[in-house]
Length: 135
Image 1 (cartoon, rainbow, N blue to C red):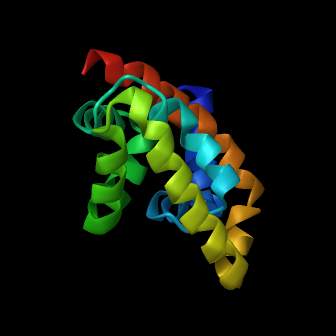
Image 2 (image 1 turned 90 degrees about the vertical axis):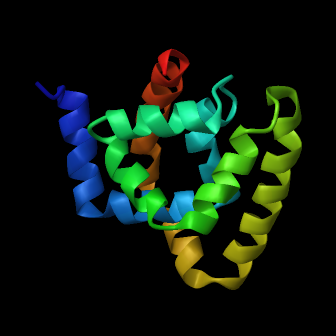
Image 3 (image 1 turned 30 degrees about the vertical axis):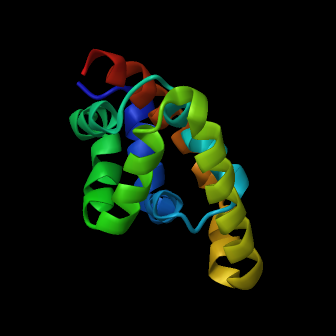
């Protein structure tokens, strides 16, 4: 049975948060929105563990499927997660700088960056970060 949180998150995704979330994964949302993925980015899990945890989760699997459709962005996330934990901050900071620049030049990216539904997704990434430890 799917929990009420999962149902709520699915509803939020279906109402447009999904587009915002996939944009986040594609690297076009605000640098502050990267904080939504912070639980995963700062976990001790490798990309393969995170990927398995995302595909196994009923809500995160929708995001994983979208990430699978964008190999370049998948590789960017893999590069960050396959970096030793103590060295990830440098890659995350570089990615934040790229995103900030895009936000300033792309009104659509700015709109997505300010989408309040992105905040609902932090719980999804918290669960993925916890589950990936057992994958």
